[in-house]
Image 1 (tube, rainbow, N blue to C red):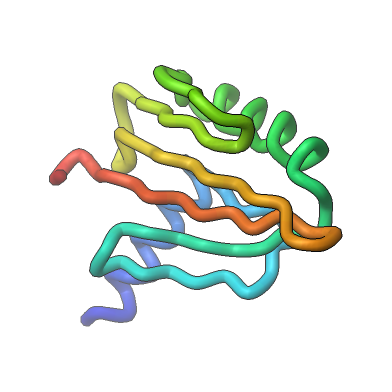
Image 2: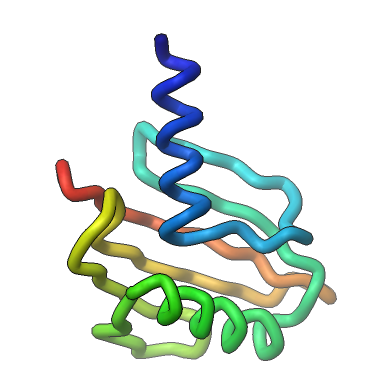
Length: 104
């Protein structure tokens, strides 16, 4: 059923992209291939940690024009393309991930 597909999708997401343990207000919008959440730390602290975690998972940064905004690609797995936008909001950081899978 749909639930198991969503769970499988989420498991892949956790393995290939990951979600910080302190993330809150997490929203999966699979129809538009977007995930959003908030972390309770400023951009300058969160972003380098997130960047490192993505690199460990095999992601390669291909473009970064603004602080907190970057495009990543990966050669294998379910997820192949990732556009990251992080914005400081008060004492927290709002994170939006737009992704594409191997299916498109």
